Length: 126
Image (tube, rainbow, N blue to C red):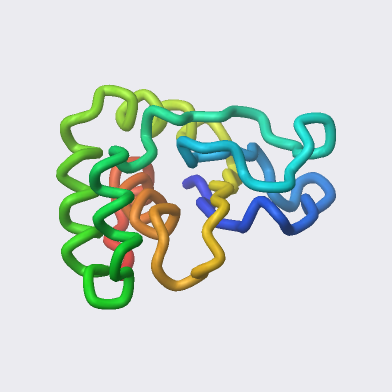
C-alpha cells in the first residue's frame, strides 16, 4: 500500500523517508521557487488540469469546487499519463504530490491524490 500525501511546494521537504518520492503536479512553475532549491523527483505536467479547466475554476473556486473535481476526474480518466503516474506511484511506499496553490482545501492535488489512491490502493477518499 502506498501512502499518498499532498504538500505545498513552498514547505520544506521532510527528511527521508518523510516525503518519500516527490512529484510536482502543476503545469506552471511555482512563483518564487528556484530551480536549484526546489526538490522534486518528477515533474508531471501532463496530469495537471487543462488550461481551460484551471482558468474556469480559478474564476470562482469556492462555488465551482464540486464541479471542478468532477470535470478534473473526467480529464484524468481520459489521460494515459494518469495511468502512467499511477504505475509510478505504486512503486513507492510514500509519495508526496507537490502543488503551488495557496488554497489548501480546494486544489488539484486533492483530486489527484484521491484519484491515485483509488487506483493504487483501491480506496475511495472523501
